[in-house]
Image 1 (cartoon, rainbow, N blue to C red):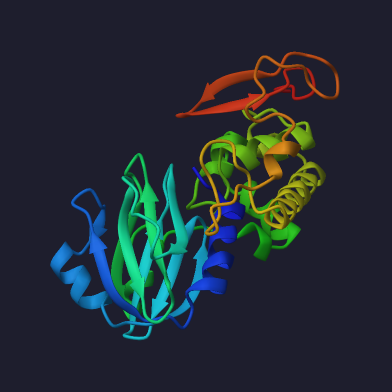
Image 2: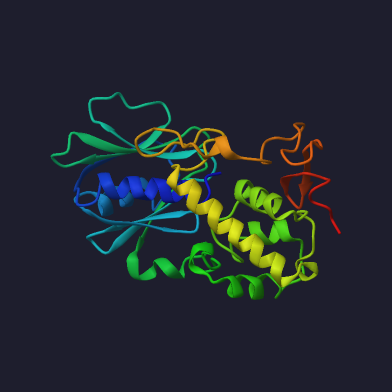
Length: 274
């Protein structure tokens, strides 16, 4: 699933391509996961102008000039592509927004069809579950805020970092990478980690996010930006997806283990439980 740096990459691409563009038509396939229904969705969005593109956690928020917001979650394999209108619509292009006097259209592509597009009145948007309950953004927090938050609940550190109501934007990739750099086992309990070590972890999270954004995100599966170009940060991963390979620090075989409902990648030697 695209995480904060990947979603931020998409949002920045949308700002460069669709802001100020009027939607003259929208084509919606029956396979699209939208709200409200096709008829109402089309009625609201036709004729509207994209005014702004923002991100909250892993969510894309496209503000329209008719006081509605298009709320998009890419889920596992969702993409936005800004392409010439002359290019044939693909099998997995579920929603196509035709733009006025532009020669391009904006397509929502998703081969696994988990991604969602929802329209809400902008005044009601932040009341919706999935937005109203999001935790703070790591890049907007101080180190002390992060330390106090993590130590406020006793739980395993990896599930805590993955909980979007706790901290927004982190997923498997950056949680695994930041824990590896901090030499913290993903099952370590939050109240057993020193304040100094938590500050170190926070620093790694911020650095990883910033570096990944500069490199247009991590493309470990299908992720690509609005221009259909993949990111480059996957070339710098040290532990995620490297199970069975040697640790870059000590040579121990990287392990993959299910913790909670998700897999974690770690070095059993560098990242001890205690």
